Image (cartoon, rainbow, N blue to C red; front, side, top):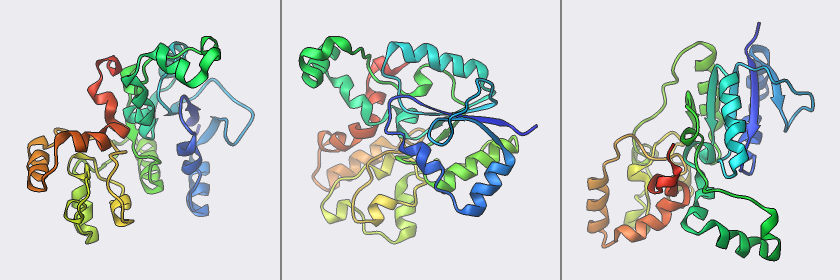
Length: 249
């Protein structure tokens, strides 16, 4: 029997799920031939509550979502966090800097009482995660790599070094040398330094490397006359949950 695969979404734009379908025809056919997709709201109406692998997109932002996610964890043999919101909490965690009641009033005005919300958190702050597919959105190549590894019962071999390494390989001029700010020195690689190669800077959507060299990052900031607060403005876009105690289990 082919592994039964399900895709679920919480608070997100659902772009990571759609991008997962952005495969070359041969890759898509190979994937469909290797698994049985039993739940995927974006592409099919019939659904099953029995599955082996669950892909979770989005962060947890409502109390009711906790029980729903825990139920998915109990059913799935393998649970995968898909995309930045699921892996790190993503941009949704920016709201954690505000009082929830004030935030709801600011967004919904007199209708605030109709909505409920809790501080946003990544999937691994609620349940155990077996694998991560990082990015906003993840790269198609990494999605395929992780899926293939899981089907073979192996742990995917993913980068755990900074984006700076890929920047050098791409021949990019350092963002700091261009007078900008960047969190590539502490951000996990795997995107081929896409944003920097396009003339922008690293936003940190893939989360931090394990044991980031914060000392080296501070040295870089000092060299270019920048402050920690300036870099934190970019850091908090995707990684503010790492600073907030309410994001932990």
